[in-house]
Amino acid sequence: MAISEKMDSLNTELTQWQKVIEARAQLQLARSTIQGVNSLLQTIADGGSFDTVDVEIKQSLVAAWQVLKDAQTALDADSIKTLLDWSP
Image (cartoon, rainbow, N blue to C red; front, side, top):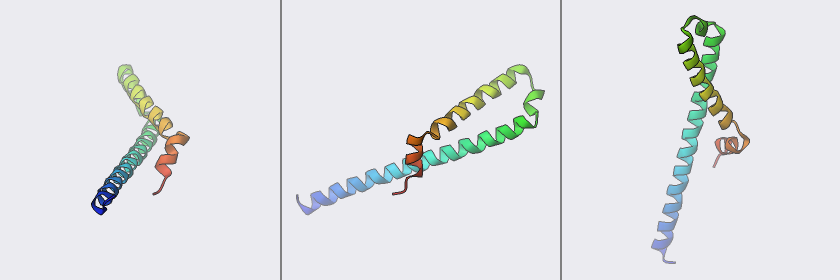
């Protein structure tokens, strides 16, 4: 393999690793954001604020919140935590 071919191959591999690291960083950000929002919504719910709105609005809030809880549970799975806690 010529030096230029080897350099091209190494550059391609480096670019791929950079993209993997960026993807991991974005997933870490998403997990952190979801955890923060879930915590904030729990505080609001514990304060009784959801109890003062119309039933339809409350149901929508609870349904949307459940989506976030499900996402947090999924992101806390061992197979995903392995990626998010990994350091190159």
